[in-house]
Length: 405
Ligand code: HEM
Image (cartoon, rainbow, N blue to C red):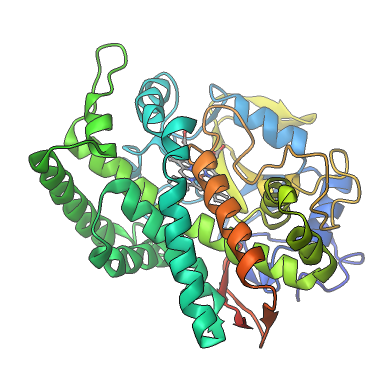
């Protein structure tokens, strides 16, 4: 069973989208297209009992994302199991798991550090990092694009943003891998030891930066005040922990799958190299086409309905961003990769509303700089072997992509 198999004859009744087999070759886009047409809000039974509402249309994902009173992130978390990755009580300390009004206050404080001006100041550092990473692999003439390019760029940018020394990047990588493994594990709270170790390190780093003085994200976050509320250092450490999870794999996976999309569509890559002004638009198309976070979950706080389908209080709904980003009611010929596409309201960063990705500006900047430098420096980039994928229903991720450059 693969995503490229013809899904025309598949009986949707029996499909369990939490079975990673469907994602072997990437998200099963033909299956999602059928669901959007035939069963846009569909009950997905799970083998162990229970199930969830699978929501595949753009408008429905958007409406649910914007209605935080009816569809909670706090009540039972944003994955199917409340204790997936970390125990729910620990998860609830991070922004992603909060509902208004707490979410609103907390997010306002954090946003001060991510306003466009602050992000724009990072461009020179990002470009220096990207060119260092690319020049090192160009020198060798070949590399595995995932560990050699896509991994170090976002990790390094996060380290710069959080004021962490480059020497600690391998630690950050190991912790990211620990959290990723926790996400894939059927065991509840599997990433707890990793998270506790990482939070301890981040707390120490924050104390070090405070003692050293000077301007940094830490000092900005400590100074930010909304309605008389400030973050304490433990809350800043928790936020940094979220950044390591939210800002790392996501950007890495978009960079590698986006590069693969360009290699699979050489005429688009040629167009991008010929006219750099297309790159911001190409980044939006790459975000849409790869939509690397396949889903997040919400829990209904009351009896309600979506697209005419009754939903009971306590039911889980799975928001398939990856499907919404290819909804034919929004996009012309949605399976086509087209860097000149005009429609841009993809859901790679979520369905909109209050939880819309806080790092979208930073991710866009990183990806723009990466593809600019790739277009300038890697005109001969070519696949040199098979790509390998992570076995996951949640992350659309390559683990290996051998290339010559
Ligand atoms: C291409 C890269 C990225 C993708 C695809 C991505 C995707 C997402 C998605 C789907 C959400 C959930 C939205 C929702 O529930 O409505 C989210 C939230 C978030 N992202 Fe990103 N993200 C990316 C990069 C980043 C970066 C670079 C950072 C920061 C350094 C970041 C920080 C966050 C945070 C803090 C949240 C939680 C926002 C909230 O709950 O209010 N993300 N992201």
